[in-house]
Image (cartoon, rainbow, N blue to C red; front, top):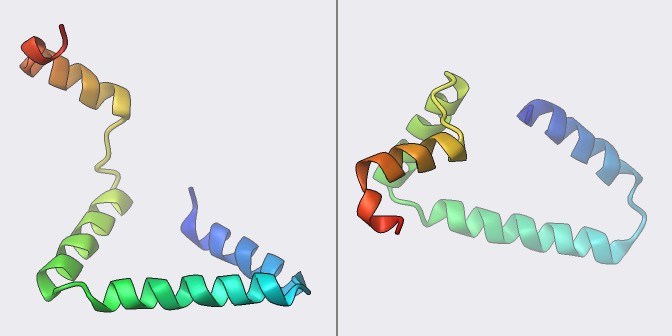
Length: 79
């Protein structure tokens, strides 16, 4: 997923919304998100930033590869 493209898509969609109820829902979501972000500790914010940088660098694994490695390492959990 291209984050910047998704943001632009949402901005374009939002610019065309004419329903006040939808706008209020989005504002509530925004407020909730701001409250959650502001409640993170400095170390949590640092860990999130580190994780995002890792993703941008391509350091990701598929669900399937993680499950395969887990099954190989802990076969007794998959009986």
